[in-house]
Amino acid sequence: MRAKIIGVGSALPEKIVTNDDLARIVETNDEWIRTRTGIEQRRVSDDKTATSDLAIKAAAKALKKSGLAANQLDLIIVATTSPDFLFPSVACILQKELQVARAAAFDLSAACSGFNYALTVAANFIENGTLKNILVVGADTLTKYLNWQDRGTCILFGDAAGAVVLAPSKDDSGIIASWLKAEGSLGEYLTMPGGGSRDPEAKNGRFITMDGKNVFKFAVRALEESIKQVLAKANLTTTDIDLLIPHQANTRIIDHVSKKLGLPKEKVYVNLQKYGNTSAASIPLALDEALAEGRIHKGDIILLSGFGAGLTAGANIIRYSSSDYDKITS
Ligand code: UT7
Image (cartoon, rainbow, N blue to C red; front, side):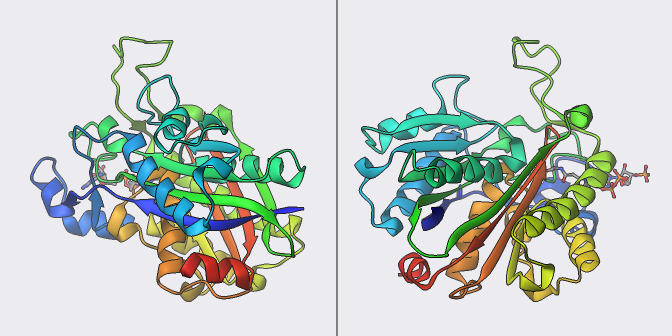
């Protein structure tokens, strides 16, 4: 048995912050940010908006599209590294707010790789017959953890949430292969030093710190590796991919890997110019937009691939059946 996506949704904060807006608070400029990252603007949540607020909106949309009632869900997994609280989890907040009475709920921490990790975990529950209907959300508000004086990080991130509902597939559609990895030895390249149990008072700062060059090197290597590995697991090659949805971090990373693998631009989905790097939300947000824009067709093979803090990487291949497609686009 396979797990297939039967509903997709996403949510964004209203406030748009452009590169020119950032140039007014830190020494940078639109030209540098566009050419080095591809980012033109990002969405930033206000003080009253926490990660669960965006996650609830995205989840409600995905649930509505799926045609399932909330009480039919068996499990909620939220991939996030910016939860409202250390506990309760964002998943438990969703369970309460969406009134998903009988679902179990937990958060999963794999940073920007979180959605691929959560999708893989959820698919395994369905594949082995343990659970039937699962809500998987990727949600982050990393702009709350930016040092707005650090031009190496504050230009990169934005806030968003994306969600999918998974259910058992009765045909050959669904998640056909998954691949995950971690390189904890490289963890120091992308960290949130303060606020955890090693430094509960955040004396070391509650801000994202990053060695951009080394993360870049890992990202290029991991994106290529994850695509090759997951294709091998599915017994497919790059020519079988109809649409690659990579983690939306930097167009230079995406272009480099696409070129190396011989993937033409029309087979690679990019929306980071509008949203920046939205961490765990980036892939489900891109999937939602790709569907809305008619970029995904009946029977298409979609490859989702990402990398992030940990350092981590992961990928999933999805085959869309016509019945999923009709439901999602209706
Ligand atoms: O989900 C994973 C999250 N992280 C990533 O994906 C990050 C991966 N890394 C990157 O995307 C890139 O490393 C960055 C976009 C962060 C930086 O690009 P880079 O080409 O690696 O630039 P750099 O750090 O080597 O800096 C080049 C120059 C430096 O000046 P000098 O030393 O050559 O005079 C920097 O000080 O650009 C300067 N610089 C900037 N200038 C204007 C760095 N940041 C900025 C900025 N505006 N925002």
